[in-house]
Image (cartoon, rainbow, N blue to C red; front, side, top):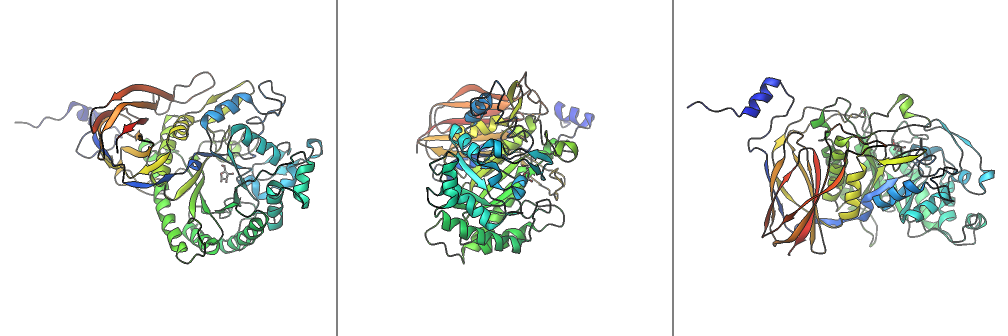
Length: 532
Ligand code: AHR
């Protein structure tokens, strides 16, 4: 008898499609959850965000005095509402590259007396109408934790210390009194401070070698901690993975030299799809995960000789991540409308995968900040008369409002595909994944409920999946929410949001296994009770 070639395969062959070769066992998968097989606590700060003085993130984004959509403090009310819904748990400010030539004193005091400065990171005029106190007010309005980056480029360690005093010391010394004079009697008690931004990058103003940075950051840390004991310090880890860079040397040196004083090491990563190769692009978050594992090992190494008393080990703060490749370089990378990336569905899937990776590595990733909040590579996009939610808003909103508790070490068995040696799309070294699973999965367990997050990378086919609880039965209905859209290239705009999240029919449970079919190019969150 002649072997039958499935009609679909024949069509693909004839069409010469780029659909990747899959493993043999078709589009069927298994996920196993065992409540006692845990990774660590999901820290709420992995749903952080980032506000930089860059393009229209601050001016014309969150802050737009005079606009009829703004409140008495100049905050755009429509933007504030969308941001609150996003539930950002911590917001990093004021940069980014901007901070490496920023004197925080320029941004405090009476607005009429604030001096405009040339902004050298992004090539604009910084009016300084928005500064530390305005940011603190904004953070309060959202109900988020402020996180300040100090200037380790052109700034001095004493400038950094004075900023801590201005923010955190109740009264007495000059800068605490200055804050009071400016109309803010109570200290802000800012807990998170980072010792500079991307100091490993030659693009950074005041860029340093690993050794010089570590020396400066150590002295800054000493002064800052003495000014406000109890603050949490974040060292600038690797951001430069371009050819010729040595991120491992940077991270090892920083960890070794600062191991007694820092609480986090900050890592940055952006990815893109300049070759329009969907399957390579949606595999890029696996590279982030490889980096997490590498840095986790370096942290363990540094901890062996650290003197930290009872303090926690050093954790990773992934304090910049996103898709960023279109609005990069040239006019799109500088000036008043810099970095206005417009996102599509495939970008939203990549963001969901980043978040899955943070949850899967919850034992060591304790902070993450999507770069950035509004207009600049951001989930919220404005013009003078309105705003819309970009595609990447939806996975972040779902995670930040649902995925808490204990991260579970989930078993996943699903079809895979190979990728070619690929570039991350941002001028960085390329890598290759031989077996990329079509399903990207994380799970958390909280108060008797399991929250399962699944990206189906397959852009053509649904993947029918048996989801098994190995520790107890599922009970009641399981709620299903899906982020999807008509096509992987579909994007949102002011008048339409074809990519969004929507509730799907609940899954009825009856025992230890449920079966669900994950739609092509989708992110799905399933939430429901499981007995322990
Ligand atoms: O987020 C945009 C920029 O990317 C930041 O200013 C910088 O830290 C990174 O290179």
